[in-house]
Length: 438
Image 1 (spheres, one colour):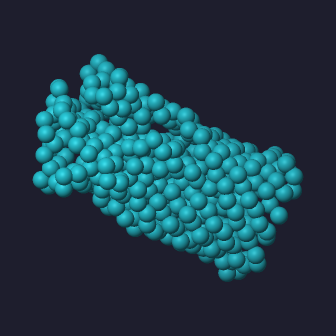
Image 2: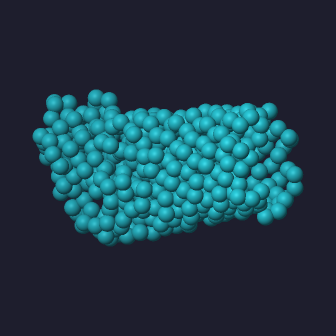
Image 3: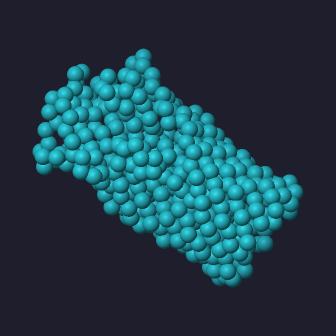
């Protein structure tokens, strides 16, 4: 869930930053305005983060242009315990910058943005016997997905606005995992590669990882899109809805020599991650302006993880021309996310926000893995915006996800499973942005 390797950009007054994802592999909120409201964003003006939320709400912005610069902090805390041993993920503090531009002219609003979509990951040490089994490998995982987005919104009339975007999507991935000989051979589903003898103790490691702060060892690109609308039922009450398509990403590939299988000896080759995609998402929401000071919002979002997270499939191509296909069952469930929030305009300069984000854990206990602990359920958020002048502002939001604990119920750990393994995960995150309009 560490996405140090994605540099997001924010447009105008709301910035999504590269992040340690929390609704499965999605962020709990895109931009400090929406994040302060628990992620709710479907039916009110939440700035250019509408590109990641509901692009139609871009049409609710005022005339003019703007630029924003943002910084996000991500503080995940992942702990693992089993058989009297413990391991803590060292990936617990990440800082990400963001920048972008958007403009509205007449009935049209358009711009360009670079956003972090989400991901997941962990960092362990070779001294963590529970994770490394004594092999000289630092187990880790990192999945990062980002988008270059070109949005367009059109005000059909004073009440009805439609919008959409074309998204160029990139994905990167690192993985270093240690598993028993039984587990390693159980993941192999085909091919003619012979991994050779296991390391002492009967373990193998599969590794493809780099040290680049902005990309993983395996890379791929593709396309996606979004559609949405917002309708003012009354001057005070708006309804909005959006649909985000499933991505069409090509396979993620390392370069030749970018992967290793480590046993008693080390073989070097290439990894191809097969058909890794981001799921389709749809959502609907309401926003109600109670009076000149109070506004409340509530969204429902459905993330169809089951269509893309059934199995995690890879192909290892050895330098001698042999290959092996691997498959790791995931069997994620679809996720229902409820986002609620409120804002209070204290005076002309200061607006305060608070909210909650509530979801089910999409990862089944049978297959939960300490390298992929995307088990967070709920978040409690707060935020504020301060107008420094009529043209410049600062937005801030804080998100806290209480600890979630799950116990693996799959195969025995001696055969590469998770039975009896306890995984705990909590987070404290924030986003801050400076925006300037003209």
